[in-house]
Every structure is written in structure tokens, then in C-alpha cells.
Length: 139
Image (cartoon, rainbow, N blue to C red):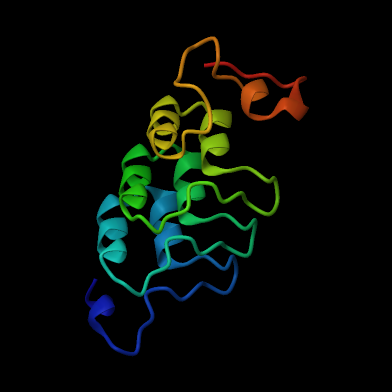
């Protein structure tokens, strides 16, 4: 993390291939320590979408079920939990629900208040994706 101390290194620079920032990669891979260090900086955008699918760090962490990383990202008041990706139009809450990450869903629900509290009969793909009634997944 000594690179973060250098003036000529941008901690928010996206990579060339996917357009992901260091925060996006840390969130995607569940690296809590790196996420915490990056979020402590004022020059790191927690809402920077990648160029692959337009996913934010919160969306990437929610998709993978990294509940602690999701919690860290939501501690910053400027993190937007309602941003949908460009490819599928899914919010972080929808990604977490679609992939069966119950704890992540509950953490996101506390912040966004988009759907009723979790109950086994309510949490399904149909609830979050009404247009996909053929592919209902419950957990």
C-alpha cells in the first residue's frame, strides 16, 4: 500500500481492459483491508462504474456476496446503493438476491428500503425481477 502514498499514482485510475478501479477489484475479490484503505481517501470514487458492464464497486461486492465489503462501502454516505449496471439493469440488491446472498440482501435492505424485510416466502428472483417469472430461484 506504499503506492497510495505516492503523489504521481492515482488510486482511482481504472485499468485498460475492464475499466475497473482498484476499489472495484478489491470489492470484487472481497479484500476488506484494501477496500477500507481506499475508502479512507477522499479521492476515491465509490460509485465509479466499470466499462465492462457498468457495475460499481458495491454492485460487484453484492454480486459476489462479500457482505463485509458491502457494509464498508455503505458506511460512506456518498455510496449510491440504487445504481443499476448498464448490461442487465440490476442494482446491488438485485445482484445479491439473484445470487442467493441472504446476509448481503439484508445489509442492503437496511440502507435502501426497497423491498420488505427478508422472509423465505418473499425473497425470490420473481420479487426482484418480475419479467423473469420463468426462472424463479428461492433461497
